[in-house]
Length: 318
Image (cartoon, rainbow, N blue to C red; front, side, top):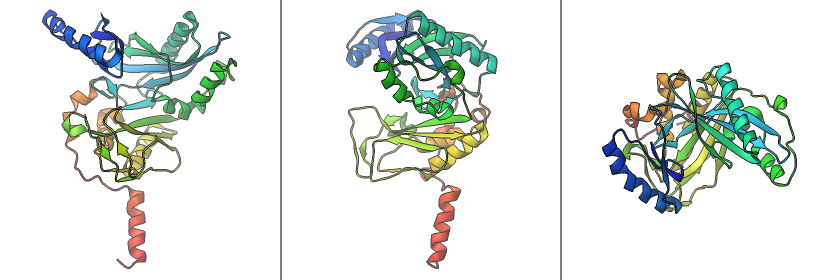
């Protein structure tokens, strides 16, 4: 794997299966790295084919206290960029969970880390963890960790920056249920996830128990072509994996973003696949399921929305 040293967000990374591949991709990665990050440095590392992408949220203060907030599964990706995230991972055993979380804490303690951060691993088919990188910042997917632990990571990060000690110890951190974050991107999955910018003619955010939406868009918002294509983050929580999937489907069906194409219908297709529902998937999932882009342009209506529409129609004698 050829990677830009300053890379991120899936940019500046290419798999090389031969010496010819390496020669061909090198100039491309250097060019992409220079344009995106202002640095031309690249490095080589072992390519772990179709791993599971597991990351651990940690918090560390200036007094040497380091805690983990369990792991997230970020294996569903396109072009090395995450599409949805899950906490905790439905793929790990409890022993594996303990191992990877302890690895993350050990790494952070070794460097005297102070801040919120994420230690990221690749988990191969032989159940071996490989350290990939550490993101020394808050990440998009922090919301799923907040949902299963009840800990406000942003608040803790501010307290750490203010020189305060962590407000809790490792034994105080408990997890409950499952959370899934769907990245609602202004992209066309049918056209290789090409960004689809423009004016949002209608926006409706779903609600109800266990449903959280983080967004800055609104009806009439002009989505510019200069930045990342993310419109919103839809995060759902439920006590069980099965209930989380059902609640996620309902929330996606209730969510309305018109005027631009989004990843909403693609997420609905992911929820239908037997592998995903069984919690068995890796970073090759999107490429392994090209049929998922064959969804209808018209999304089905949720049971709740259908019931409301029927009640309104009955009231007006329609």
